[in-house]
Image (cartoon, rainbow over the protein chains, first blue to last red):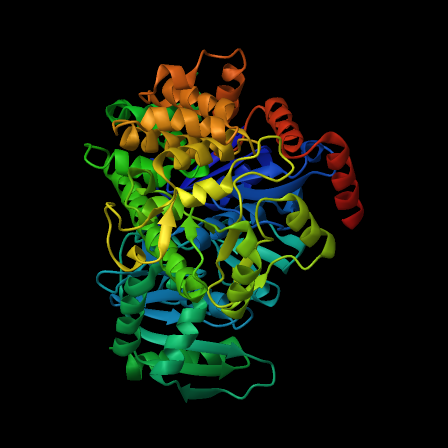
Length: 289
Length: 348
């Protein structure tokens, strides 16, 4: 590969190679201040033209690497940074089996972790990003890595992927140099990446014990509400949020059971972030243990 | 000679050579091994070496992956056994599942995808019916695809299980019917060995399932690699052959059996090629008469097998294209191929 960068993110080292300089430059700028990875890397991402001539003519980026999704649609070169991020997600989702992988965001305070999971658009990224600027440590906005032996959560503080409405909200909250380029017209709408703050990056090796699980749901017409969620429902929703639960077999079952049995869980509805943050703080004060 | 794939071959052949690798070489080696589905095998070969901590961790992950693949493959074989048990049909496991079920060295660390079984051709209809009743479904619904498999191929169209999402390939012989060699599949089934008969292992798979006789197992692996397909991922298949030959090579009459069975199945040339290339790449001890003299194009096959970079991508496009075209001409005569490609092009 002509251009490459290696990134250490939590316990995982990733290598991204590209036939074009652009995506690597953008990635290097976005991940400024991250530590040098310990070689060799766990996973490789390749950004390549999907047809040889697509390197120059209407260049388009196919996401490849150790693991790939057959039939995935290539992205325009100007969305190369998104391609790199998708490539890293893909390696984790299909390849990483050292931990139980939950599609969830997580933040930490006083050594204890809050885990948030929900469907796309539920606001788990936005809430984690905001909490990460207001006294919590951001552990990750995309994947939470549950330790199979001791049940702690490992940080995986990749750049946060802000979408559509949440972009403006964070633009007023953080310094501009922590934001990546604005990517208009991607398959997921407008995207802008946010580098976690220096504290979150410095603490990327520090694990935390899970203390509260939330299932947020956002809707402009939803009245703020808190609902108890039974253990069986929590369990099933987390199996759906996990990419490798089935693969891990008994070890995955044991780790998830321990998490569900030992951690209180609530579903919350909200229609604006101020009110969601208040709900989170209130529940944390009452329930976190 | 210094492609990343070549590093994989060297490390498999001589694990101690890995202790001198630089960080960069490690990344290239592990990436190429993963792309060739050889990371699990490599992890087993390097098990007891003194390696950098991060390398050891990645290799331990690969061993855990391979162990899960083994358990899952054996479970899938057991599911097929239960579905087919009432039929009183001999069911012969092939490839990775067979190696794992028999506890062969070729199965250690191996990734295993689909379940491949061999059954007598005149019992295909009942086998198909039993699998459909037990929850397997057709993957391809297209009428032409179905016809293509049934008239010309050596297996049923692929089936996938609706709950477990795992594929089964039901073979009635080991090469497409349109290929030039005609192996004697009935003889392979007659000569097959029941699991549990003098084999290691034990457990639920001991009853009712069979594996090929040693020589036939090598012949099938060689036919799969050199008489069918374009050699993509072939390093792994050649590693299977190395492990089988090292395991069986010391048995009485093994090489004599191999020679006459290869002739009976009309696969003497692919078997000879497999022996020569295994000897050349993996230093496999082989019988010189079976292997024959080195051919001018053995070097081309070697270069094709080694066309993998340290980024995991395939190299040497022209050579790969050549072998791709070869794979189609091996499968069927040219006019038939032209007709097939025409229909496939119109389909899409």
